[in-house]
Amino acid sequence: MPHRSLHAAAILLLVILKEQTSSPASLSGSEWTYSGPDGETSWSKNYPSCGGLLQSPIDLHSDILQYDASLVPLDFQGYNVSANEQFSLTNNGHSVKLKLPPAMHIQGLPSRYSATQLHLHWGNQNNPHGSEHTVGGKHFAAELHIVHYNSDLYPDASAASNESEGLAVLAVLIEMGSFNPSYDKIFSHLQEVKYEGQEVLIPGFSIEELLPERPAEYYRYKGSLTTPPCHPTVLWTVFRNPVQISQEQLLALETDLYCTRENDSSPREMINNFRHVQKFDERLVYISFRQDLTYTGLSLGIILSVALAGILGICIVLAVSIWLFRRKKSSKKGDNNKGVIYKPAIKKETEAHA
Image (cartoon, helix red, strand yellow):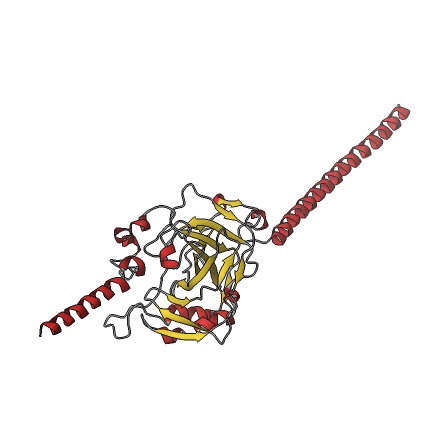
């Protein structure tokens, strides 16, 4: 009997230890939400870094941008995954997350950064403006984050997450437009991970297809995780050019998922899972492209066309004004000449009769 008691006690101790090590709140962030009592305004109570420095996301506006010629194009290694391999897609209660193999990595940063996962942020069907970063105050429909960790220094993302420049995140701004077959390789499986904790294996595909055109054009700054624990350890690369997904694809993202488990008595839709922009005092965002190429979203060609049209319009107005002035002056001169010729003739005739 004593042996059975000792055996039962040992099993109970192992279960307790397993629970404590498998779900630490500070890493999983399982005790937070985007709204309600545990929402964004309360994050700093349990996660002090969320109220600290170098927080993300931010608004990318012209006053804080500085061109940096040393920002080279990134090289995406191992991003083209064969369809024979599989990705694990999960609903973690905050977003839909795709686990990535560490062989996938970035070259072009100070260290080698290996991929760990990607996930998305979005709004809701009535207000489809769910990007985390904004550009000149403008929200995009959604945002994709591809998370990497510094594999030169750390064994995994958990170890790197609380270390300076331990993480590097690629951010892709998403706008509504045409159907995107690459993004549909994720979206077509959303119904299979509808509730928190659900997981499905999907065929591998090229993650590089999720990136926008001209990925060499980007914003770069030092910031934080945009979810608790909000560690200020992220080297951000926000691509300048957005990608497009269709209205139907965006709607699936906004309506297919829940933050709660399948049998939860109070189901909550997974919507508005984005953090609002944070203060960005006394910092600069470095850009790999010249600012004068774009102004308020207009292309250089459009700007030049408008400028030339304006100059041409001014020239036409000046030409017409000069022509009218000369015509008026000529007409007045003609009237004066007629008077001078006629009056002396009358005078001479009068004198002759006298």
